[in-house]
Image (cartoon, rainbow, N blue to C red; front, side):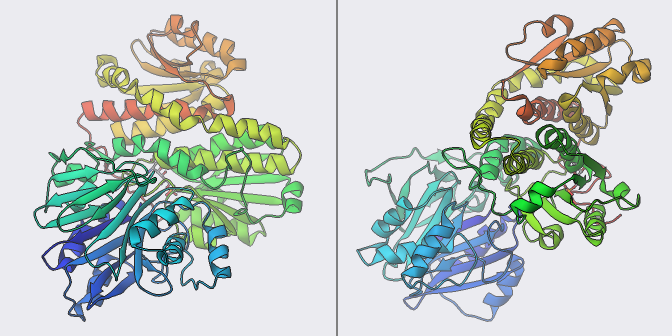
Length: 611
Ligand code: AGP
């Protein structure tokens, strides 16, 4: 997620802006820039790379200014580059804009503005805002111009704008992307997150959706998009800087779990229309290529691989073609057999996992096109794959992947539905019904968060805190989904945990079930529920301490388990997005109860860039 900072006051603005941007570095970024007023003109200094590269640029200048805007960019549209770095300006160079979010209709706006003679200098969605403001600035001041511009935008935004003809004010606006105002005597601050302003003030306003604000040295005036005045309650920040980076959560892991609803929404943005039609033009495969597909390889490591295991079930159900899912480090050495019409789907949060990159190159050497599902824009896989579906989960700081996993599932669903529609396996109406169901996922994840206290209490049970082994059981899609749960628990709590296909118990794993051993039984696939119930009884008979994940409407399974966690009901295809949430929360609270490191587990790295 991009970092935004604005300052207007009596002190030199640049040192404050640079210091504040550094306090947002934890969010991840790939370029940085500032816009300042120098001798009555807007000047933009920006560069690809880190803030120190920006500081080097600034060190050769002696800029004196008491107002400015700074930005660190996490690329979504347009690769990391100086041209794509923020802030962006209009044709006249009078207006500078910094933005965080995704403008869904930027392509049509860009075409419209270019037809009117506007000249674009970047590939970003953000730049359309600057030219829209310019288009409207002819009618008056920056506030009215920004208000008019915003009415044309679809998507999410946190905007800070400045106009060289109005040197006494910054304009701010937000919708679905955070923005706070820091208040102090004779100076005021704007930031995308609280840590940026903490050294200067603990008095903040947290803007709400559709707020538009005029920030001056004296204060802030807020109104809604219709121009009606609004007031926001001043909030006194009690967190320290480290807590503030985590949004008040104790660990990035919990913060990122709670970002899952937004990450799902963002991953669906621009790809699902309001009337539930698919828009996946970014998949650069012709309909002929999609219709002729006869084999799909899904290749990844770790959590991304487990997303691929769910993907295999989904693709085979919807497309009825064989899908091979491979751990990348195995794929690259097994001399895979490619057919004439194969496709390789490469999944990676970082886009830099060495084995996954090598496996992708192996497939492409075999003449197979690579479709990447990647979170890090501009990464190696992002650049080398034949086409990309970004997951737009935002930077994932915790080593344990959570919001990236659920966004990877969303991306896999969208691709599978697109392919099913093109191949005539599903009608446009059937796809629309499924997409309507998918749109309920964010609020259903939120409903599971409403039961977080119950899950946290489970983590305090001695059977869990004392256990040495933890089993996850499932059948069908529930088994595919349980694999990620087992990985998450082991890598954060250090408890040995494994997922077993419930029907496989009698072929060996049952020997490990002992009295009091915790077993998470995922039981939301209706057609397999009866058989799953038998397996639950098998492990209950050996004294296992069973936690059942069941649909809200299931009143039978709970009689066979020690604890039950209810899951809101969605189409069974999409249930893996929901059933993983309790495991993420349980893993977090159990690891916390055990005093584990959580964000930086021993022996592990966020991106495994070596074999
Ligand atoms: C998952 O929690 C782990 N951090 C790890 O398994 C990770 O998923 C794996 O290393 C793959 O990383 P990637 O998605 O960045 O390629």
